[in-house]
Amino acid sequence: MTRPPTRPVPLSGPRFQTDPAGLYRQIRGEHGAVAPVVLDGDVPAWLVLGYRELHQVTSDPVLYSRDSELWNQWDRIPADWPLLPMIGRKQPSILYTVGERHRERARVVSDALEAIDPFVLKERAERFADELIDAICARGSCDIIAEYAMLLPVRVLASVYGFSDEEGPGLVTAMNDMINGQEGALEGQRHLGASMGALLAAKSAAPGDDVASRMLANTAGFTAEEVAQDLMVMMAAGHQPSADWIGNSLRLMLTDDRFAASLSGGRHSVAEAMNEVLWEDTPTQNVAGRWASRDTHLGGRLIGRGDLVLLGVAAANSDPQVRTDAGALTGGNNAHLSFGHGEHRCPFPAQEVAETIARTGIEVLLDRLPDVDLAVAEDALTRRPSPWLRGLTALPVTYTPTPALGAPR
Image (cartoon, rainbow, N blue to C red; front, side, top):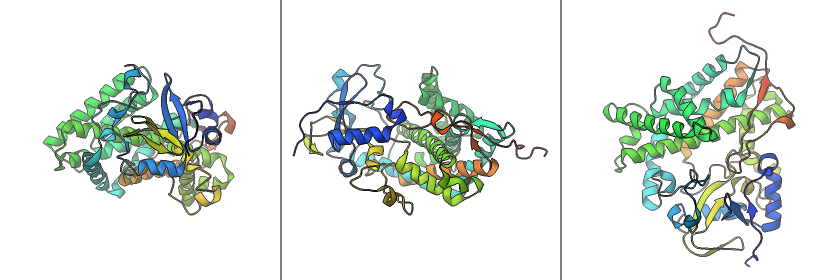
């Protein structure tokens, strides 16, 4: 049965920052598993809140395509539309390729990431984490988000991609400027693009044991520009969600008595906290997007050809039709949709890389600063006002000052 038309929900507002779970429950109660929404500039779209419906969309890449050229709203989109970096047109990256070309491209990415030695990855994550903690450990207080979580993932990713350690800090600045939309966002994008181009030129001349060299060596006929685009997508997709995964997990561990043992070295609780975050406080809240290749029905809604369909990951993870609070989290249940589903999901090797970086980052911090404690009341913590990626704006903590590694004690 098709639902009657209802007033669209603005995909903006303070509740995405303060109470997204309650907002998703309200939208589901008023609109069902698929809700009409409007983006910046009153641009219409559909938000899929149901777990089964989201599974259906991501399982059918022909009907619900990643080809943004299908969008029936392009004539309404101005050149300065703020969501263009997220919903781009004619972008050459893996995000917007479809069919066999996408599958081949995804295989190249997966193979290059899967070949990363897990011991080398963990060693580099530990080394960079120690380096960052050395800069703050003697002070007795810091902001974990700005001074740690937002610095670690891109340093590790840059290293395994093939960048030198000396290039890492510049890439951190460029990536964070791009993500935060600061005045330097355009310059950050240029720096990342130029750095990636220089990396690929160097690896073409002298390949190494790194992701960039392995992608260049593939036999699928991809150009250096395509490889550069995919590496930039992988770095952006791996950095911010991993940083938020670190921050959201540490917030949970510092504010929930169930995880108090973790602060004394309980490694098992770190994994439990990280898994719970993927269910209850996932960094990737909503994902754009899919486009209907023909008229169809979904969740009682008539979806028109070319309509934009948004994946409501956080809402689907909390869908009461498929889970209970206890059942979903028992035994590290991985049926959440935080990494996506279907052929456009986050490649499994990329998930493993992100988990290693995030878990190592948390464990090293707790090892080095074992009495770390929240410096403000829990209700004073704030989130970014975004419906897309959910993360803390700051996580101020205190701890007993300790010397840097190798410093005189």
